Length: 249
Image 1: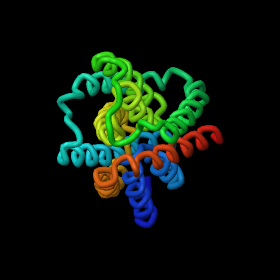
Image 2: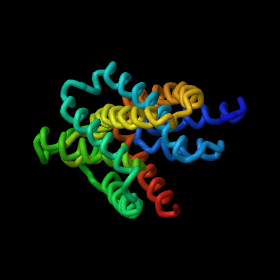
Image 3: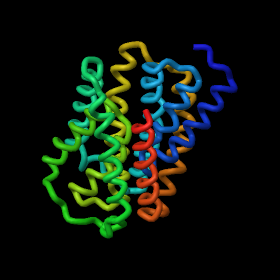
Image 4: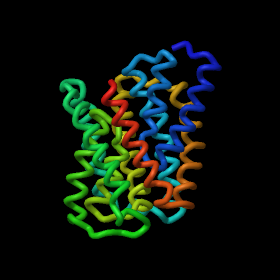
């Protein structure tokens, strides 16, 4: 595609803002994907390029959380494997199945999570009671949310954070860090199949990826500094914003 330098600069700025939001509460695709569509990128290429640029942000945030000892990847290997498998299956399934039912169900779930994030008193900087064993969580949450991200996508990061909080009892700080690793996994799995199909705009995606790196670095540092006091309100607003977008569309 013929993208002018001015349009490309706007896309990079959008990616930077998306990286900040996504590294804190998820939902960065609400900014990056519409920006790509606004620039005239066809829908399938926009989805593929969004996975490329988003991978830079999730990789940066994951690295920063690891560097600050907020994330131990070794503890999540099984969940990573199941998330990768789920994302591959979802990316393949979306070519044959209708996602309209997900379009109707996702806003309801997100609004429910938004209310939980606001009104639940135990959500904060302390871990809560673990409800299921980790192997069960890895299969249930890893595969299903990986499938969702590859098949549909909106709010996947928010759903992952909620799963860590509700099922494993993680505090918001740990849940946000762990979510970035699973998000990165699902992004890379989906990107692989988009790339094999020749649907990625590499120059645009790589330029936006630079903005994502900057945004994710800023956002993850804000989380490390402010913890739950920053994550809770952003999770609420991102959940509501995604719900409104899905309901309007």
